[in-house]
Length: 221
Image 1 (spheres, one colour):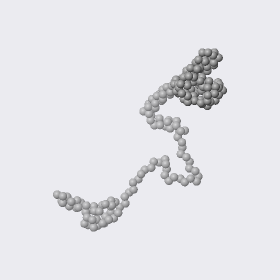
Image 2 (tube, rainbow, N blue to C red):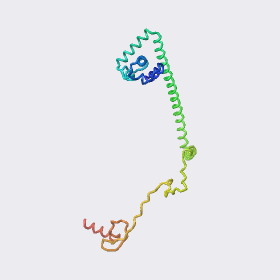
Image 3 (cartoon, one colour):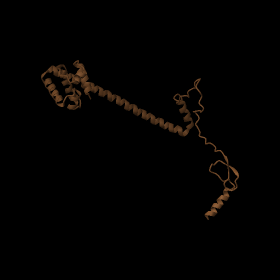
């Protein structure tokens, strides 16, 4: 479908006037008549309303567009040369629009065909990959690595003066929990002997701990 932009461009070239003059507010005859023809063609070749056409062509009111359409229609009935000129412009715009629509339809058809062919090929490849994965997964992995080896970038080589990293990025890091240090502390259970323990809150030695538990149970009983 023809757009108002295409109509304005065609009218400006045909009457040798600039687009700002055509879409402006000037009322000179050499601009006013082409603007009326543009309004007429916009109404005939597009789905734009009278207010939309007037807003695009100089910010005119919808009544101005209706008057322009009426004036051009009456001139075409009374002037054969003027009628032939307008009909030629109208036919050229309509033919160009049809050619663009046909080209767009052709491109859309090609895209749809290419998409269907791609999806069909992708479905076949998926089936083959599933079969190979069940039969020989390691062989499939090797083939995939060989196929995509060019896409896998090797690690960059270090520069001459660049310091080497302390950690190898290729080896996954493992968090090692620190081993708690044992400390020597006196027993508070009665023996007063020193004992080693890694728990800071452990204040009773292993020898006194059973005695303390028995006393606690007797007190609770």
